[in-house]
Image (tube, rainbow, N blue to C red; front, side, top):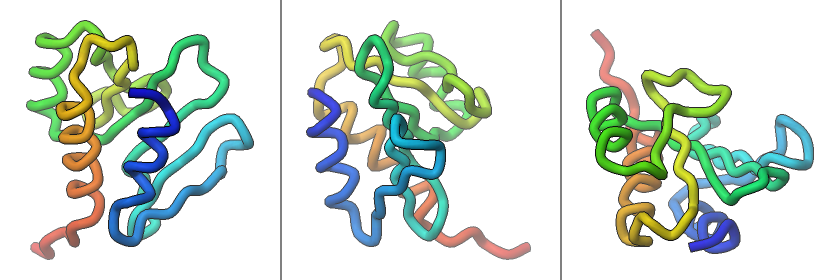
Length: 110
């Protein structure tokens, strides 16, 4: 899986938009004006950041070497996924779906 596939998959999500709020080297994908994925274009290795449930984030980091705490992000809620070929594309898409769903669904009012 490469960054073009990631980009196309993100843009296939309902109401997803691509922005460049941090400059031309980082694609930012949002839904409802909230970020669900960041994709740096200037990194030495292909990688991206996705939002994640905190408990799942820890589990994924323990299970997959390619999943690390979110680079330049809140490490409780974000993972960096390195596209080194060790994680199947199906799982990567599931993690993108999870991030999108966390951001897309409206929060319940207390």
